[in-house]
Each structure stands twice: as C-alpha cells, then as structure tokens.
Image (cartoon, rainbow, N blue to C red; front, side, top):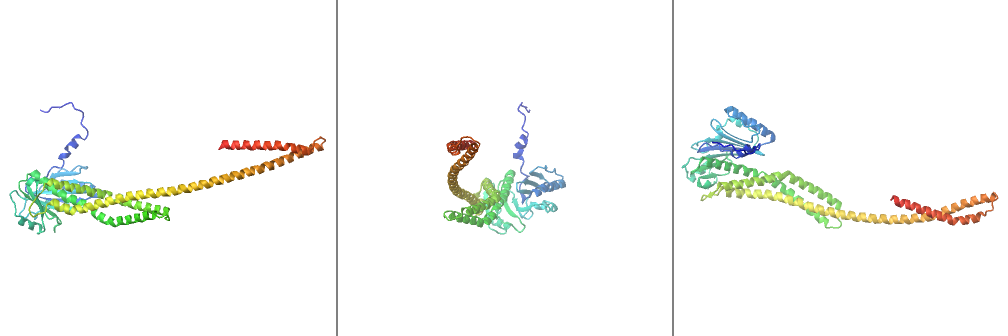
Length: 428
C-alpha cells in the first residue's frame, strides 16, 4: 500500500534529474555478442541533422523517435540494438548484435544496419571499432587469438575481477576498424555491457586527447621564437641607449601574439587534459591483472599517450608562463617610461617656474617704469592746468603746483596698483 505524505511540492526537474542515472542503460540483451562503435566529430549544423537522420531510422523500423532535445537514445530494432549519444564536439553510435560467428570479426554488428542509412551519416570519423564477446567457457589458446589480429603484437589483460580477458592490437585494420576481443570467463550481461562501454570510451577519449598534440608540435617553433624575442627585448632594456618607446611597441605586439595563441588553443589543450583524465579513470575501472607475456592495456596506452599529453600540457604551461613574463616585462618597461616622463615633466615644470619668475621680475620692472611714466604725464597735465589758471589771472605758480602734485600722484598710482594686484589675487 502506497502512503502519500504531505511533503512540499516537487521541484520542476526533480524526476528528470533523478532518472538521469538510468538514462544510459545497457542495450545488451544477452551474451555472447558483437558490437560496432562509431565516434564522429560534428558541427552545429550536423548536430541538428543528426536527430532527423536518427528519426528516419526509427520510423523505418517502427520505433518511437527520440525527443527533439534528446542527447542520448537507446532502442532495439529488428536484428540489432542501437545506443546513440551526442556530446559537446562528437557523437557516438553503438550497434549490438547477439551471438557470435565462427570468426569473431567476420560478421560485425554493423552489417545488420541498413547500408543506405549508414552511407548518409554526417561528420568526420574519429573512431571506428568492433568488439566481440566470446561464449562463456570458450577459452581459445592465446596462439589462436593472434590470427584474429593479423598476427600483430597483442596487448591484453585479465579484467573485471577475472571475469574476462581482453585482447587488442590498437591498429586500424583493412576494413577501417580497430578490434577488441573479449574472452568470457564468467561475465554477467551487465558486466559485459559495462566492459564493452569502457573499452569504447578508452578508444574514443584517447583519440580526442591526442587532437591537441599536432597543435602543440605546430606551436613549438612559435613558442621558441616568442621566447627569443622576449629575451632580445629584456636584454635591450638593460642598456641605457635603448629606445624605450620602440621596445614598448615591440613588447605590446609580442603580448598580442602570445595572447592570440593562448586564447585560440586554450580550450583544445584543456580538453586534452580532461579526456586523458577520463582515459585514466576508465583504465582504473577495468581492474586489469597482467597476463604473463602480454603488456596490459593501461601500460600500452600510458606509455604512448602520456608523453603526448605531457607535451600538450607543457606547451600550454609555457605559453601561460611566457604570457606572465611578458606582462611583468611590460609593467617594468612602462614603469621606466613613466619615470622618464615624470622626470621630463619635472624639468619642464622647473623651466616654466623659472620663466614665470623672470616674467614676474620683468613685469615688476615694467610697473616701475610705468609708475614713472604715468607720474610724468600726470604732473604734466597738472602743470598745463596750472598754467591755464595762471593765464586767466589766478596767482598760481605752475612749477610749484607741479612739484607739489608729484608725491600725491605717486601715492595714488601706488594705491591703484595695489588695488589691481588685490583684485587679480582674488580672481586666481
């Protein structure tokens, strides 16, 4: 009997988030079986077409089509099962068929898929691989396994707590596919499904992690060139005869080039590191145990993948370090330029202050001359007025009047100049 409790209203996405852990359930219905796995890089336009293309296959076999916003889908068709997942930059298709032929890779699962539908898949192929789980208790001799891989050197180990052994050569064969052979000791169906999925993910993620390696190799000469250019600039900064303005322009151009490389490739290098971490985690999940005479899958991948990933990480770190060094050098050079400009400004202010003092002295001298000139002309006017009065019959001596007026004129002019200076001072 179900009891309904008076709990708060559900979050709008509670059930969707809760059921997400069950969204990518296994498509394997039983063992033994064969699977074909495809991983394709996709553009945004191809992602939109991809759902339409998948819906066409579903309609063809009368299977419910995936939702328009779905990023994963699993379904059973007439003679095969399909699992589809859409990731950020790639999509994967896993086709599974139950049962095994006499030759493990003679009739891959992909042969059950309509050829016309496969031929219209869009994108660029990143990974194509076949995997076969042999029937339980059918433990072939290790010498019998080698022909399935065209006698190439094999990599293999016991996995999943001894429930199975996995063998591969990590090579692309003439059919364009790599191969995994799983020897079933006592696998359960769910274990077989998880094992296959981990092997496919290791194959996909190791290829995706290596996408950054060609970029790292291409950027290596650019990195050396930028490093040498920075050394040339810093060496020129130690010399007093250097042109700081020219050095600053060169340093700015160098900083722009470095930042362009960093921003253009940062996501690719970060993705390489993230994909490599996923490969390491999937290798741990395999729980490998060495088979005498064989290199384990983890040893093989780490020995070949780790140096490439370390090269990518080193390149990214060197660009980051170089960017910081350029920034420090730029700050140092700008500080030196600012100090030089401040000194020039100080010298200019000192020169302007000296000129102002000289102008003040000249102005004071001119004022002194002006006082004499104004006094002379004012006294002359007073004398002319006294002579006019004397001519009219007044008993006035023009010379005495002129002489007596001079002190008063000087006092008036001095007070006038003082008043003008006071007004100018208040205005400033």
